[in-house]
Length: 117
Image 1: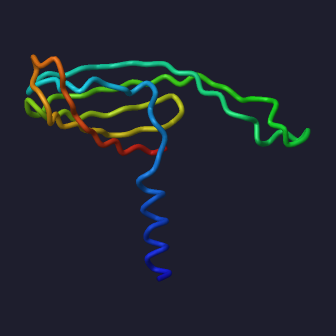
Image 2: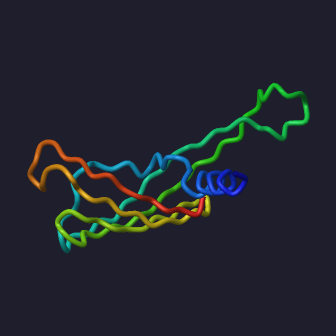
């Protein structure tokens, strides 16, 4: 039983993360041979948990994050790419278009993103 609990806990840590607010995309893929370079900026603010003056978390810490990405269409329905951010995270991602094509009004493409943070 302890092995299952440890496996569940490790899986949760490996498969969980935060959404990339600068990495949201549409459901349409680029198409085979096409590529795209992207850039984004976001501002992150969090309570200052190291504040020694009480536990009220009245103070916040904030910083901007710059995001640079590159992706390429491997096939008409599969894109792969990479991302670097100024908060020292890096990642690779892919998405596969399961609904629609390049000219459809409605498309859907689930993706997978593996990042350092």
